[in-house]
Image (cartoon, rainbow, N blue to C red; front, side, top):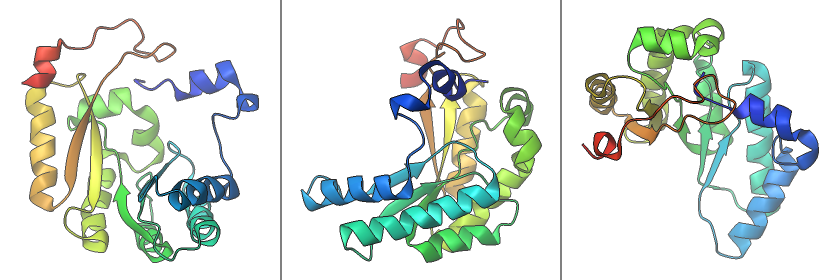
Length: 199
């Protein structure tokens, strides 16, 4: 409910070209930037999409990155949903992604269920996401798995407990600064003061 991606898509539409990109478009864009020496890493993310489609899309993108840039190693991060079949995480690694991001969003299960009903309902729920993060560390290695939290909605103590837990398991926990974006269900709410984030 903190996210406004669907509102933005509905407002601006696919015709603006700011949303879904083909594997070819991503491969060509990366090739241009990589060839010019402007990038040495690519972060592929698309929100939460059905597992089979997500896996196929990310595998196609990996092939396109290598093909158009003429590289074997594209130094990529796949930011994906926790797959129900955890073995699919192995397939991202086999496709050439060096790191993976599985954004749990909230450490507090009750807040997670309330604010992320789609993830709670369709992606295995909080416990499964945590299991996927821990499984990913075994696949990608210590420090090569990250999970972002939406900083500012749940209590600070809970947020920090989640980051500590992930660190103890070999994953990197990060926290973004929550902005109550227009069109999200939390539009109009107030984010914490800067001092909250600094602390």
